[in-house]
Image (cartoon, helix red, strand yellow):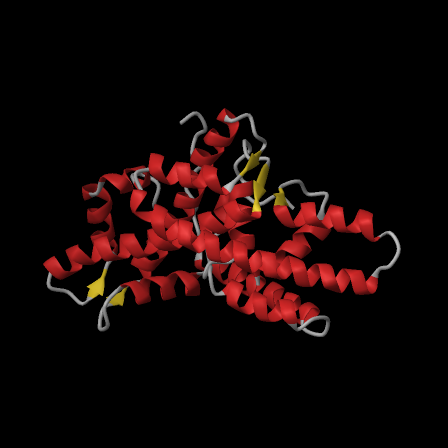
Amino acid sequence: MAAAVAPPVNPTEHNLDRCGTEEESRGAEAEEERNPQQTGPAAAAGTHSRLSKLPLTRIKALMKTDPDVSLASQESVFIIAKATELFVEMIAKDALVYTQQGKRKTLQRKDLDNAIEAIDEFAFLEGTLD
Amino acid sequence: MAERPEDLNLPNAVIGRIIKEALPDGVNVSKEARRAISQAASVFVLYATSCANNFAMKAKRKTLNAGDVLAAMEEMEFERFLEPLREALEVYKKGQKGKKVSEQRRKDKEQKTDSENDKSREDEEEEEEHMEEEEPEAENEAEEEEN
């Protein structure tokens, strides 16, 4: 791969909260704009928005931080969002194996670290998490 | 407003929900583990984007498309994602088509004059996510559809 992966994200609780509210208020505004004007697309949007749990605007903003990326189709943003969802499911399940090995009921950070070390597909994560 | 990777995180609540739904009942997740998974997800987005962009550049295209992302998944050894992603893409495309038809009808009603120019321009905006800052209208359009 020619392009280097961007430096690891370092979230703080404060930032997370801020991002969360920001996203919610934007979503609320969009809904208000849409409803009075049309009912058809709103229904379609309802089913359509179920497809991706992760907000496409946030995904797109993340993609934008890569200086080599100029344009991305809406479909590509959606596919990356969906793939990220699958990735989260996968890593949670793989980490759970270690939780169960330790006879615990709570998935902990160390279970995640073990999964990253053990599984080839997660090699790209090594050294990137706090 | 330039966003740095460090400022952008995926919503904690959504990540938490995805994790909960993936795991059996009765299993809890520590705050640290959830935070780390959220971080990992952001890294995944960046890595997948970079990889997909390589395919686009190889094909001498400036616009990243869905095919590039699928190719990236294979490259990253996430072949297991390909089938569900393709299915989701089909449903997504159908949803988009339905919206475009309704959008078209609405615009035809509202605008009798200059409809040709507006239609073609807005079709393009719906197809591509423009990365430049100078198109706030396109971003608003995109946000309406995304929500």
